[in-house]
Figure 1 (tube, rainbow, N blue to C red):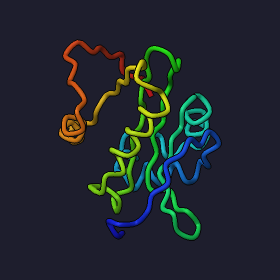
Figure 2 (figure 1 turned 90 degrees about the vertical axis):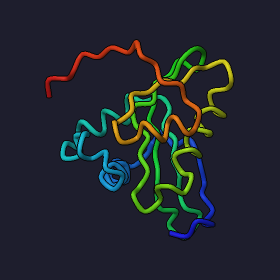
Figure 3 (figure 1 turned 90 degrees about the horizontal axis):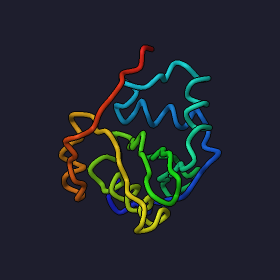
Length: 141
């Protein structure tokens, strides 16, 4: 992928499940997401009230990144996925999706997420603060 390719960032509440699955797999997040359970992937998309996409501005507008979030649009937003296809990583797509989230949410909404261990450096580089007091109940399936 060329670094100078034009990328379109948009809110896309009706994102196609197959495209979502493909980017999860291509990004590496497919290792930790239920990519073989279409019903669950659809529920994940349907339950999110902010789905942002990054698409190449070429014929077919292929999806290269997605941010899926839950927010009240007033106080806080939880980003549950920030996935960028491997071929588009290190080209600013993840940063662009986070910038689009901040633009859509406005300055009065905090953004939180739980990073995969190998992505911690990315979040630190884009200026997110590491929070030591997070807690977690693991899912059973």
